[in-house]
Amino acid sequence: MARHPELPVYRPDIYSPQAILDPYPHYASLRELGPVVWLPRHKIYALPRYAECKAVLLDDRTFVSGDGVALNAIANRLSRGTTLNSDGEDHARRRALVAHRLTPRALRAMKDVVDRQAAEIVDAAVARRTVDGVEVAAALPAAVVPDLVGWPAEGRENLLRWGAATFDILGPLNGQAVQAIPAGLGMARFAHTVAKRRKVLPGSMGDDLLRAADAGELAHAECPALMIDYLAPSLDTTLSAIASALHLFATHPGQWQLLKDDPGLIPNAVNEIVRFESPLRAFSRKVARDTEVAGTALPAGSRVLVLYASANRDAHAWDNPDTFDIRRDAARQLGFGYGTHGCAGQGLARLETQAMLRALVARVDRIEPAGPPEWAQNNIIHRLGRLPIELIPA
Amino acid sequence: MKISADYDRCEGHGLCAEQAPAIFELDDNAELVHHFEGADIPPEQLAAARAAVTSCPVAALRETP
Image 1 (cartoon, rainbow over the protein chains, first blue to last red):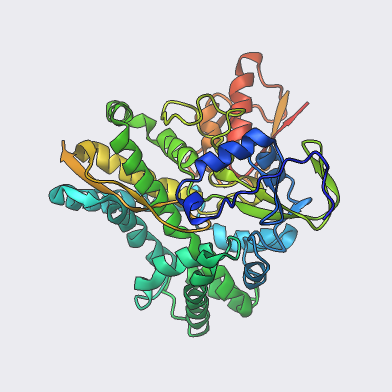
Image 2: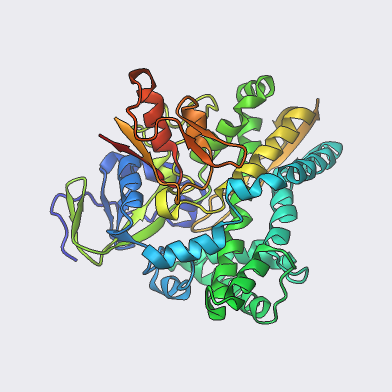
């Protein structure tokens, strides 16, 4: 592939097991090299800085999703038919079907129920006092999402593992992705069965989707992929944000005190958590026509890697980007993506994470580390795998 | 400077109203209300208005001359 002669090149594998656990030094090196950096191992132009990531996400005619957003061709073929992998009118139609019940507007009715569930989860955790923060973080998404989507009771025990695998496959085709293929196919098979046998819960979003297909608004064959659109991203990602919140407030007691003193900071704290420990590392886009990014010519057919997690730590866009501070204005962070493909579930993710923080602030005096945290291995999702903490009751 | 709002795109996330409450609010149905629709943004509101544009998660707000 012809490349700009002065184009910076970064040879280390940013998806090696070590880099997955600690990606930030790699992102810092990439940002230092320039706005566009060639990754020879993955044959992709990395965009490590905020401005270029945002510009590319906004220009969805030039930087398209319809040929996939993964780093390997197999996953890009397998994920055809999803909202994630579509452009223009196809995307708008699918997104409208998937997202209309996920908008903050539609979710307002759920707020009290979610607050109550969060309170019960935190009460139970405080009673145990020393807990794995990852288990606490998993509880609310597990209580809220499967019912909302309408997933039948059978198979729920697999959802988190299947969802994580579905993401893992979207990375480069490394050992990590290959290992995830059976579980990813498990999710796909189950979604087909659920759609075909109409096993969704009545009144759920999945039920809506099947009814829309009955009414001719979409083909029945489109339903399984759209069910995966609902399910796969709705558990691990929010779990990541809530677990990171627990970890960050355990290790930044001054920030926790700020939140205790002014719970009005909670909505922005969620933005700052997602900025600081972005649950999604990166997705790719295909370049649809010859174009240029920050002076670098990119040929049609090449791919760019939009590094959300790096953009959110870019010193060109943020003062002291490696400092966790819930008072900074973090609303423009890119952790949920941006623009046409911006996370359709971000309203639900914010609702759940804010509910957990409200419940914690009311019941917990301090969060203290109770052992070393461990990060999980996943090509796409950045999240804790284990987080021993002690919740000191208020 | 004016700000145009794409009401079809808006999903009611409300980040604009947090950034620039004098310009944007969500009504009781969480529908966007733009107090300066088609009008110039007052100079003292420019910074807040730009922050609202950059924080919209679905890029439903645009600066126009």
